[in-house]
Image (cartoon, rainbow, N blue to C red; front, side, top):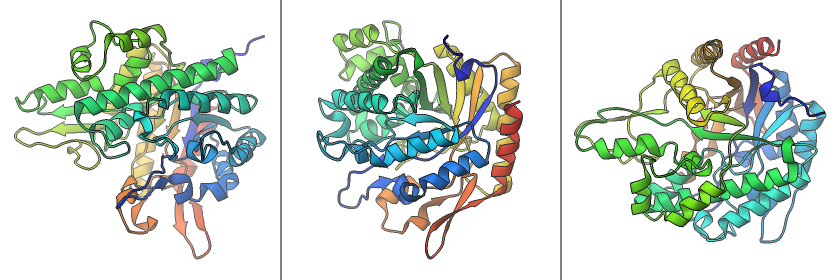
Length: 418
């Protein structure tokens, strides 16, 4: 008898995440980012899973380091991930597995721009699904695919350093093709047992969006926030707001037909929302390039923005939604206030009929800012105080120290389990 999927049992499920950004490529002035190395998760994974259990998390968003399991073409090393996923099972903790969280292995020349990137990532996904078919059934094919596309395709900030509209369309299309291949490969292995949690970043635009110098860009960005998800779900058709832009910058009719014919859908639509970063402002008379290196100013729209984003994704994609990442980077009282306010907002949406099935505090323990890549300073200079547990440098180990946010999270999770 088929069992009811976890996201259909009527409860709000609480979980956490371990930051798993991987950009292993290096060049002059740019260090590799491997958050598992920076946070010592490779060595401390067992204790880290215990931390998740200690706060009553039902699930943990966690990623396979593709560059580690595939260090060279044709060579696979699953030894570390074998131990970790066995550890999930031993603890009764559900992994929601990120297959791609920004980086590719270093041997893929041109990264997402390599003509065979979709086939490379599809093979990797199929191998992972087959190897862990008894340990993991919940997969996120690509975490934040639009941010991938912007950082690597429009802003020229991460490999392969494309820029401008043509770069954006090239990288977004390649990532979307790999996304489709990944989901179909996992589904071929797991069948109806597979659950696909698509996850993208909230991108809201406000301020002087109608100023003549910003109107065209602001309109594009408002629709572009959904571009990769629209491509993979077959929603880019004759009436799509970005169709003229896409066709003008490299997408052709054959590609559109391919996406329509091979569309994949989310079982759960994950929404990442950070109140201090998810709403960018356009200012009349002021040009900001946008992106990590040249950001527009932001506005904290708090729970109002959160509620809008969850409603928008639920309506646009017709799937249950989950808050897949949220937090504020600040002191403990400020984090506690956001935790309480955001949980209350999610429960309010549920009471109003919005099918919100999950709440994720990100991360389980602190992380290091991506500016580490362009810095010569030690990792401690880039610490982000975000977690349910603090990272504390000691002479012998990078310690994890539980803070009051973990206690409050556990209270919310315990109520959600009832």
